[in-house]
Amino acid sequence: MRKRLDNMPASFAWLVLILGALFTAAACTPEGDRRPDDVLVIGQTAEPKSLDPHVATSLNDFRISVNLYEGLVRFREGTLEPEPALARRWELSDDGRQYTFFLREDVRFHDGTVFDASAVEFNFERLLNEDHPYHHTGPFPLAFFFDKVENVQAIDAYTVVFELAEPFAPLLSNLAYPTGLMVSPAAVRRYGIDYGRRPAGTGPFRFVEWQPRRRVLLERNPDYWGEVARPRVLVFRPLIDPMTRVAELMAGGIDIVTELSPDNVSLLRSDPRFRVHEQTGPHLWFLILNTRSGPFSDRRVRQAVNYAIDKRALVENVLQRTATVAAGPVPKAFGWAYDERIEPYPHDPERARSLLREAGLGGRVTVRLLAPTSGSGMLAPVQMAAAIQGDLAEVGLDVRIETYEWNTFLGKVNQGLDGQADMAEMAWMTNDPDTLPYLALRSAAAPENGGFNSGYYENARVDTLIEQARMTTDRDERGRLYRELQRLVREDAPWAFVASWRQNAVTTCRVKGFALQPSFFLLLRDVHKS
Picture 1: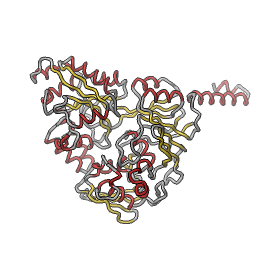
Picture 2 (picture 1 turned 60 degrees about the vertical axis):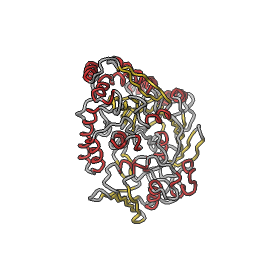
Picture 3 (picture 1 turned 45 degrees about the vertical axis):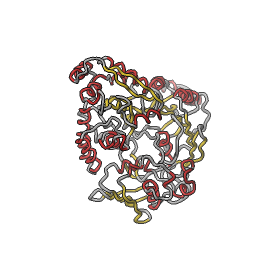
Picture 4 (picture 1 turned 120 degrees about the vertical axis):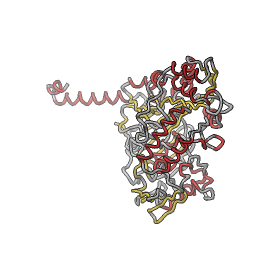
């Protein structure tokens, strides 16, 4: 091509280049895309419930909020490592019970009020103090992330101290999570329980409007303390049906779409108009096994289930390589805490049958499996249940599948499996290796105690490791404790460890600067179209 252009008249050569550029742009632009280049439209799986980050628990809410708000710290891009954000730096006391944060002095909330130490005080008092005059603007379901915080005190206008009941290693990770984002005290006072529909943060975008079931609209914050955002407008559209999201993408109605099905991801990979983005994050898909009663009260039967399930086939065929095989209770995304020596249970039906015989289950046994019809991070739950049913049938376990819509399913599982079922599908996305073991593997986290240990797993050494790890501020030592925990839990097999989701998003090929994050958040400040 270069030689041919060199032999052409200059004017004609430029015409060829211009037409080529126009053809490339047209190929990247679906038929219906008539939006300005500085407007980004994002198709999400559901409408947010609240844009108050202290109230929200949904990934859809979080993906909007991280563009509106900031916390004292944030995850460094592409990692789960905390770095300074609204705090310029921090210091930790020798006893691990006091964090001192030194704040930026050039930040204002979107409503024009100053971000300072008193604003930090307000945020955490509102979250943690039931007597606070604006605690009623909750509930705050993830406030337990900060349950070790005894006091938050402004030392001066831009210095704030967190005093802890005991050393608490996950604090920085929890501060980087959306529950730690800073809301405007003035806006909370003004709007009260309606604040979640009138949000004001300090982020690179500010709120414009929320049209129920249609869109949430954000605009560039021209007064942002950092680098000003490249998009002028962000439009978040709730598109619940995955086929609708694909259709809108193909028709040019959206620029970025999240959480497509494995079939759709596979289809779009080969379409030059689009770019498929994937990122394996801190996600775990597993089967909770009822360790209190029934056949899975025997560790050998639980191990048999892990050997019987062909996890590689699930990942490659059912999930079409949109996940990786899991080996234990700590996702591989937490590299410093993950034990690389632990291998996933291999697919070994003969070993499974042998363990079942050792446990006295030589004949056919019927077990009940609860599965949702959908749910964020649940990875094709009905198809997964059917495939697992086939694998377990081969070794003598006949699975009776019961499916429920998401909220009904959660209501059943969160009550505990005893008396209800033998197994239940589950998926967690976490921000620290402490979260899932603490909430779902501790003996004290049984459902009757308000926890999520729905299979009633008990191991005194695991309990000790969990408590020690969350109180250990030396990360190398924390990592050692988590690696020991992984080995014990893998051997006990209170869960069938199946897969870690490789989250996906698809963009038109005009979208530049977009990257998925291990946190599963969408950071859109530097995304643009060309």
